Image (cartoon, rainbow, N blue to C red; front, side, top):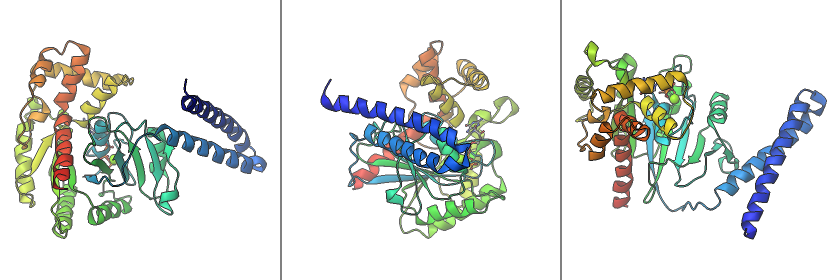
Length: 370
Ligand SMILES: Nc1nc2c(ncn2[C@@H]2O[C@H](COP(=O)(O)OP(=O)(O)OP(=O)(O)O)[C@@H](O)[C@H]2O)c(=O)[nH]1
Ligand SMILES: [Mg+2]
């Protein structure tokens, strides 16, 4: 074992024991106000240790400061599935999501190929000196729920996107139509006004099309884009397409046609629409990564798989984007009794791969221009 490897292992074990001891001391002192300041100091040491660990782990990843980024803003009214969609791209539950108003601040996710795990720091104040810490969905949920409103900057690897030419940055935004919190609207509008993004992914809930909140948000978006000097691409994601029931006459094909007319009426000429199920994509990728699914999620995927076996069309086929269906899509449909193939069928069914192709293409198109 080389010197640096030994040194690395030594740092790892020291960090583990400092963090563990600090945790125990902190638990003890927080019960006792007199010793609370000791606890806080030890907590600080633990945070530093965590920070050192996060930095050491990714020290070998080269991020060229000169390499430009391509920024994408994901926006929608509340609960349309923005965070779930980004989690599906990441391939795990990372950003907080829920069936109630959830995201309350802006999350900036910077894709860095081969980055180990996810690290984050909170913006605001002296942003550059804020420490990077390892994060999980639990930590991010705590950051989301804190009263601070600075951006949470996350770095990690979005495995399906290749950053050869440009680095992808995705913004998750709070649904602006939250009557309980008017600040959400300001945060999203400010990002749209000031941001240096190249693409907007506008998510619509397929089960709630034509609601007034969307009309308002589409109008605001038109207004903001008309004030911008450069042209921004917009891709509309018809999310929750899995929830439409063809037997009840809720055809996805019809939904895409109606949405095209609706968006054209609101000033978006020849809109690019993709139908997707972020939930299927995320759950299938969780299963692929051997993450235990809840029984409900397991049954949900089972139901979708049955539909695929009965010949249900893939959601990605319903799109106004000109893309060919890949031949392995048809192969995977035939072999879905095999577990690995079943997961691939579910991911293909979800339509997420089509969105990934759009993102990858944007990264290379823009770098061609540069
Ligand atoms: N059936 C179905 N449910 C979905 C899908 N995508 C998201 N959901 C569910 O919709 C709810 C809202 O999802 P979020 O991702 O939190 O929505 P959001 O747009 O980020 O919401 P805010 O942050 O509050 O604006 C959650 O319960 C998700 O599980 C989908 O494709 N299909
Ligand atoms: Mg959200």
